[in-house]
Image 1: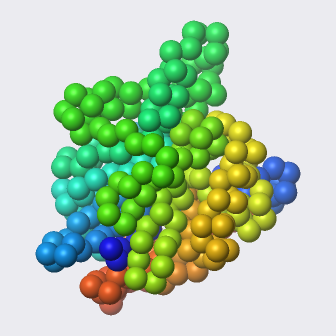
Image 2 (image 1 turned 180 degrees about the vertical axis):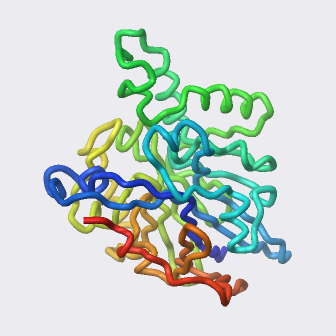
Amino acid sequence: MDYSIRPLCFSHVDLPREFFGGVPIHSGEGVSASPMIYVLLSGQDVSGNLHHYLVDAGFHADKWIHRFGFYDWESPETVLGKVGATPEQIEKVFLTHMHFDHANNVGAFPNADVYVQLAEYQGWLQALALPDLYTPLGEASWITSSFDRDDARVFGELARDHRLHFVGDDEELVPGIRGHLSRDGHTFGTQWLSVDTSSGPYVVAGDAVMWYSNVEEMWPSGYTNGSTYNMLMTYGQIHEYLEGDVDRIVPGHDPLVFDRHPSWKIGANEVAEVHVAAWDTPRRPPMAEPATGQSAQRA
């Protein structure tokens, strides 16, 4: 298979650089205007049929925007429309993990089956079952600082409708796309995806790699629900898989993705074309503005 890979920014948030780059190596460096991203993977089968898959689903515009100060939020209809797709065309959503900013808006894709690592799902169910001792701050407590309790209900409904699928390590999700488990790293069962293209493999990392610097400096990000050592081991696995070509990673929140690859901006947010398949064509429209990329970071 030869997939087109298009990271799509749907919102931004200002957070300390150490949140993504790591403590203390990036402590005291100020604030970064960091993109919230999901990634459109588009493939064509041997019969010429087009298939759209989405890596992560983002979050919907409700309490999370106000809780953390997100801005520039755009709907999936608007974001996907920039590259000629619609939410209804998404056949499968591959969740890298179940943090709200990656999983909260799965309901926006009515025809999609949802794929998540079994270890991730089981881990969050176990965490949500902990007694009140572990949530002294209510919803602001550590356990639910990045997880929306309402999502447990949504995932239950997906399971009832036979649209929720649990996967394991190194499992083929569709031809040319595999899920790789990063157990107890960023979360209980984060997965990174390897994607085949005509120019070789790419990795869509989600928060298994938040910034390129995590791998380039071999330094885990500053926020995790799991083990920073396990995160480091994942960086090594991805580095070896790509034979050191770090630019073939699509990180979870790095504005540099819009500098290292052809990119543009329509409306509030950026689009990158990491790889355009041989059967496909670039989607940048004539009226598009240059992407801001690294210039969006605020010192």
